[in-house]
Image 1 (tube, rainbow, N blue to C red):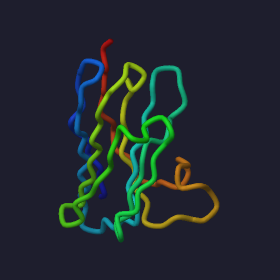
Image 2 (image 1 turned 90 degrees about the vertical axis):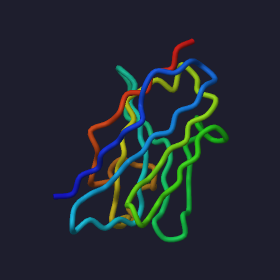
Image 3 (image 1 turned 90 degrees about the horizontal axis):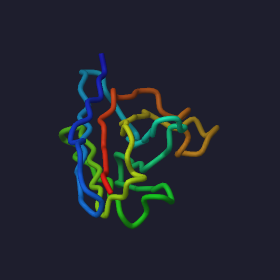
Image 4 (image 1 turned 135 degrees about the vertical axis):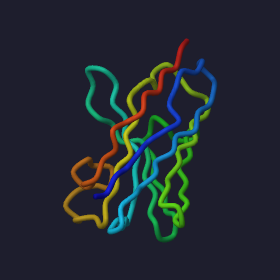
Length: 127
C-alpha cells in the first residue's frame, strides 16, 4: 500500500516561512513526479508546484513563483516545499500527489495526472 504523508503545516504570520514535507512509503512505490496542490475553503484545488524524480525538473504555479521552492530527496522518497514570504491568500490545505508517469493527455499541473494523494496539511497565514 502506497502512502503519502504530509507534515510541516501550521500557523504563521504574513511574511513568514514554512517548510512542508511529503514522505512516500510502500514497497512498490515508484514515482516519476511529485507535486503539491492546495485547496482553500470554497475554492477549487489549485496546482502549486511539481518536481521530477529524474533531473529534478520543476514547474510552479504563477501565484507562488519566486516565493516557493520545491525540492526532493530521492533516497528518502521525500519531497519538500519551502514557502517564503507567505501571504494570507496562501492559507489552504496543502496536498502532496504523485504520478508514476504522465499520460500526455493533460498539462502536468492537472490534478488528473496524479493518482496517489496524501491527506493534506493545513497552512494558515495570519495578516
